[in-house]
Length: 308
Image (cartoon, rainbow, N blue to C red; front, side):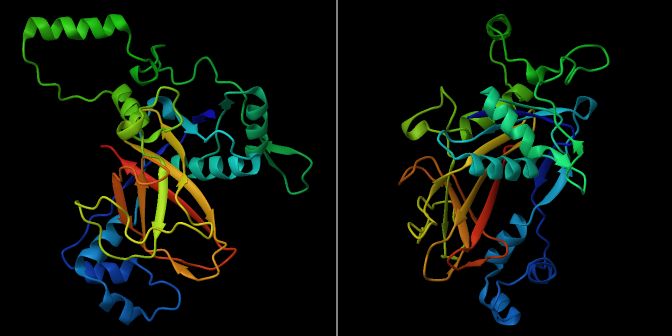
């Protein structure tokens, strides 16, 4: 399911820099898991593990756009129940904007109307609406003062492509160093949007499946699988909801697990795959403040991929 939302306050996430004294920094920023003695927990972590956890503790920073406007694209896997759609879209939106959506357009009128209601707010009595997003994109959205739309919302034309190719033929060997806004949007879709109609398949399929584990070993560049990946109790690998704000250098993957496992599970690490089983694992990271889940607990997981 395809959803576009008008974003007046888009955000990016950036990694927190790791200081030379990583242990002192970790004690300032990280909270040990519930039930763990803080001193023992920090002593048990290696410097590499603490550095990875600190780096994953992200800060929201503003993203400048024309007139403060952007378009956030959200893809929800087909067949997702409506209550889950509402939850996933709200979670994705929170990772992409600090203000309510100005407008919402989905691939069906009924889904559009449903999501407009989800984001509509009322006063304390519940009788009067205090905010309602539009159900159409305004004609002047993302238009600059000169009346021109920025390149990021215009797909490259065949004529433009031919011009680039012709220029390359005339000039000879050309080093392309500038990635356009349209290139950022293209890269995000290719890497993370598995619901795209023309998405790659097999080894080239986008990576939008999330997995979790109790294993706390520091991730390594040579890892090809998530050690101890959980596969039952409601905590198995699952397809996430993809979202991306136009021209942004990040995209997000969101999923919410509900544990039905009779054994408490401390979630220490997560990973992204391009298949529902086995497949390629392009991303792996430690969880900054590992939660312990018991049956009935929900785990909301938002993965932000930085393509800067």
